[in-house]
Length: 65
Image 1 (spheres, rainbow, N blue to C red):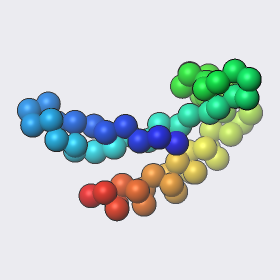
Image 2 (image 1 turned 90 degrees about the vertical axis):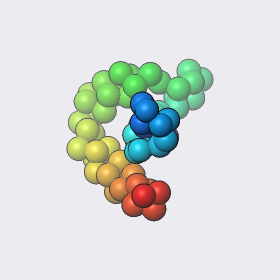
Image 3 (image 1 turned 120 degrees about the horizontal axis):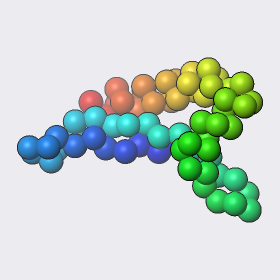
């Protein structure tokens, strides 16, 4: 997972973070986000991934605020 800052238009200051799920495919490199979503849907893992993202990203968010 990677975090992308969300910036305020006027000040340019960081106002939040967006959690980005990424998947590295050996021999193919990083899958595009749409590929990660499709893979999760086909595998029936959307809920599992969502729970993991929340469990991982929320503590990071609390720490940075």
